[in-house]
Length: 268
Image (cartoon, rainbow, N blue to C red; front, side, top):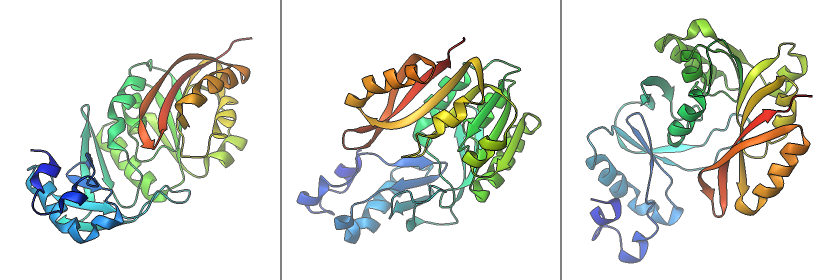
């Protein structure tokens, strides 16, 4: 039964349309984003979510947007028990994390595997904004050596644990730092880079490009409106890339989507 149907007679009819159609599930923690006008019904909504699936232990409500360099939001516990540390499973890999202390998007699982399947054993890969390792671990499991750069110290801690849990710690190097500063002093070059760019930080592409070999790949993520894509394709070409593919990876705001670009650095 859909969530809105479970709440008929509990939430007034005129408010039912404001209940989100979907929520994010990270491990056994459900994350809602309820509008403020549903505040007085939040406990009832959370209980409906909790009763609807045996694999959900806790329900959180995100009370703020992602903020700051760490991409952290604020949360309140609506239902359930225990703490906000969970174990998330994705395509055979496992990720431990604290939902309230790190950024993690469970909806990008397919995209992470799409990219990982392109990786060849022996490649050297750069991952800025690496988080707890959802891009890092699958590529290391493919036989790549991965340099992960992440500014959030908590995320680096979980990334190190996740590399161990998935037995790829020997092929994973973690740097807890600002990636813009690291790229200024980094001397090594990479066969591939995967860049899950935070909103408004598209300038990272030029910095990453300087460290990718000619003929190498950059998988670049950006937040744009559909009508901006044609211009982006041209701008990436002007930067020295061949745009091999691009795809939409879900809406993030009205008319704004996350887009994935597979960019190959042109040879001379």
